[in-house]
Amino acid sequence: MIGQDPFELLSSLRGDDADDYIKPGDDPAADALLERISNGTTAASPTPRPFRRRRVVAGAVAGVLLSSGAVAAAVWLDQPADPATLSCYSSASLDPEVQVGLPVNAESTPVEQCATLWRNGTLASGDAPPLAACVTTDGITAVIPGDDETCTSLGLAGRDPGVDPDGTVAARVVSTISDQYPTDCVDSVDQAVTIVEEILADLEADGWEIRPTGAITDERPCAYAAIDASAQVVLIVTAAGAP
Amino acid sequence: MSGVHADRDAERRTQFEEVFRAHHRSVARFVAARYPTVDGGDLVALTFEVAWRRLDDAPLDAVRGWLFGIARNHARNAIRRRGRQRVLVDVLANEPVRRVSSLHDERLPVETAERLAAALGQLSESDRDVIELAAFEGLSGADLGAALGVSAGTASVRLHRARGRLSDLFEAGR
Image (cartoon, each protein chain N blue to C red):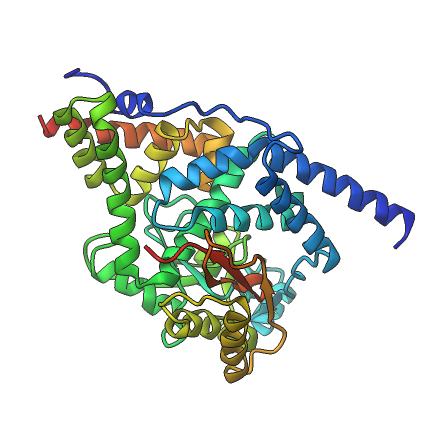
């Protein structure tokens, strides 16, 4: 065994990974889930998030440069479609060596959050370099070493530092539900919906949907809240008690 | 609803059903093995709910990896929601160790399993990710790239480098 490639050893632990097709009737629970997803979402008519309007800033500077015949590099600013997720990159690359995902902290800024990971050595050792907040094509905030022009050079928009009411609310929804939703088992879907309704009402989070996805059963005795911030949906899911 | 829209809706449902029936079991296995501290049923349901919404974005040559990528993102979100980042780091750091340890009696000598677990535990999170997806889940090429959110070429390079670092750590543990 000594001298064997550890990757091959790990691969040898893999079980049968055949993609076994589920025929209708093979697995009633899977059939029910399929039905629930395709019917439930269709009934609500799938509503893809609208593309956020992009805008070009530094227009006056660009105008001057263009009028003099020079080519100006415009800085694109955008708001993240998913305001609750943040990704910290270890280098100015779309494929950094280290990439750490975090929930957005409404009390801080993306750059400050990622700077902390630089300072504590999670991303690299040493002080935090100058950092820029960009918006990826997936609509999440990515904080990378550099400045707004670095975002542009990577084909990304700079993150609009302006106040985005939707984004601020979404981040607060995520953090507040995480903090306030009971850690003990909530044994009623209706109760879970009420708890989330109250949190959303307190936050004045208009436009959010609460969507129960299952019933309480012996096997799934607790109701939890799962948040899809980009779709502004709080799913109430039932599951076993927390481990 | 117009006839054109009805046809498109039916076509979309058929496409989703194929994806669901072909990959539900492998996603469920992946979730159960990889994220034992997250409720597997919920995670599978959330994964396919997102897949339904984003069906138009599904890479036809890498649907399995794409689904794994969705599940990974949701698992991490679930773990984050449950606690603070420290919890996320602890959970992610301990899961591969637990997984190897749980199998050593059947397949590997204890000493080898412990060295593997130690080597995995010392890898960076990104290295560990790519090793686990390739070794434990058998992903390669476009599927591996889709699961990691990078191109197939980048995934291959990342795997090669991670394998090298894993080998170094494994040998250093002798």
